[in-house]
Length: 353
Image (cartoon, rainbow, N blue to C red; front, side, top):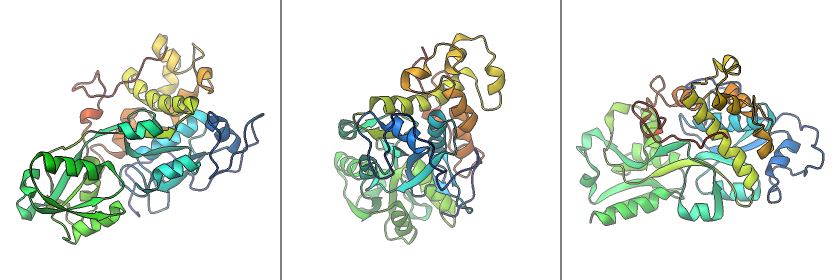
């Protein structure tokens, strides 16, 4: 997208590193070839790099900067996953995917995991594995300030720009139907096209997840000319997705996320990590692999979480670097604060034991 970075969590690799020597007995799956059920971890180790499906370009979450380097909240979780599995957060190839092709890319083996603002739903969980929630969001609306629209209920009969292939279409239909209102959908196959149409006044409002709308407003020529309406019309638990039938890989991705959440809860950061490795706290010692031998239970080294935190930081560091008060998006933690924070949020990871 040619946007300046919000932060630099580490150098990115846009082309894969040389193939690593194959792990003994590991499959020789290549990009575009889905490994057999239960074999993704072995395939990634044999290949020597992770294939991570990301957004095509969403400020704060996943985008290429002016130097072509991938940055963002979801990008940092891609790097964290590579660090957990391969010990190197740079051993990753970023694969841009659209809302319409992301699941086929995952099913075909073009990517190993989707870290791509994907909402968990019943039907998706029935055909894919949702490996946790890394961002709690909800769908909303943006409208021109000059229009006088200050509530979604003012949009009766309005033209609404929306991207196809997402949960937003169904949410929009449900909300207007429930409130007895009419609207005219103006549908596009990409988010960029929907935003551009809104900017050209081809519609009266733009609808998307609130984080997406915050990014869209920042990209406008005059951001203050647009308002985010107060209504949140859906629950959008966004998180990583992997293929069905691969429980071990689901565990690896889920616990990569959990490690960042637990690290924040325990006060472990990328800056104090080495000192924390000397901690006598049983919880800290288990997370950092000093005792318990837990990494081996999911096919990883015992110090896998150390590599995750050293690469991307804890959840709070990842959030603030990409989405927080010092970034263009200036998003508050809100629901994405720790359960034991002040104020508290929904972030919660199972105990490490």
